[in-house]
Length: 360
Image (cartoon, rainbow, N blue to C red):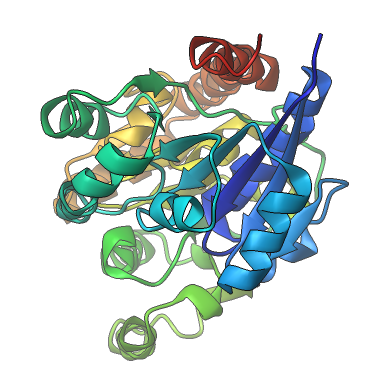
């Protein structure tokens, strides 16, 4: 079996794409594919290092050096619509695949794909997308000529598993994300403040990376904490190493609390998937990408975006209805283990390489 060498490119090592890249480089290696990572900027994810070659480079000169030293059979450009043309300009002649991940709201995704049409047509051999309805629809209608591969993302369900932890002395209302519009953090604060009125013992835990926050949102966030009287009820966790998150998700679950996901739209929703995999119950907006692992009242709960009253009712049901809570925790964990195994991803990836005649 000939070894194939691929490069994944992205802007910054952080968030869901950083998680995906670390997982897939490890599993692809076991399946005969050597994968390297190229980030245009440094970021907090570099602390989650692995034995994968990771490059940080943004100049044409550095990128030229990397691609002509390693002779990749294929390069997968994640989210960055300008990268395929840039690679061709630097003399790369192999297969280029555009990967749609983390394209933000429906409008942002639409804008990216419409703007990208000439680049996709001129420089890309295929597109790879997660099984997310809005992205699939856009690629079918806007780029019908482009070869499409739908590959579900994967999850390390061995690492992201329930672990024994100390139980916090209060129920936790957790939120993980960036302080920016699409993550809809305001709704998290509004819902939480209503739950706290009914359950004064509850506390908020917010996990984020300030280097990725929108500065205006960060200022607004501080104002809202004061406005809702939450500043002494919130724990703010900054840049927690990814490997420590299972302990936090397990603590949230043990506390009788929940994770809230308020996003307008998600391509996949890694934080939600990882929480469920750790047995932490999740209440989420129906943000499309999370449909692949949340079934209402079976593996998690949905609430209609913007409907604070419904969200509070669902949250309280998830916290107080012990029988339902336990059922959701067990079903959620089981579903993640069966559906998102890394080996399943690697097999689909190899099939894509074969279809593009990269494996001979």
